[in-house]
Image (cartoon, rainbow, N blue to C red; front, top):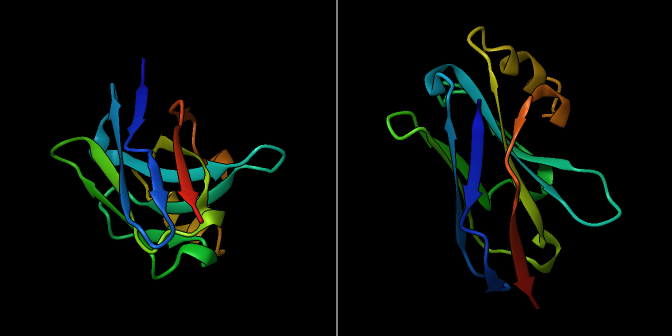
Length: 133
């Protein structure tokens, strides 16, 4: 059974930094696309950053470009979301997602300037990020 587990959420001040981590097990991590999403109550879950299985395909939501960086270490079955210059509007529950993508379909999807939650089958439980003003 595939398990996706996020960690690293915390309370930080505006302008601060935080790194989220996500591990995925019971799948071939090197053949798996990964994504970070966030959601606040009453709003839809939105794609923040996505990364292809080799790390050479990436997507960022416009509001996080230049502030967030997604990376992965396939030897550790881990994907990271490095968040800098955090803003109060970044406050949300952050979710990590995974799905098999040996054919790099993610490249086609992010070519349409999006990374939809529907692309991913496996989800973590979320980790809370709160940015105080």
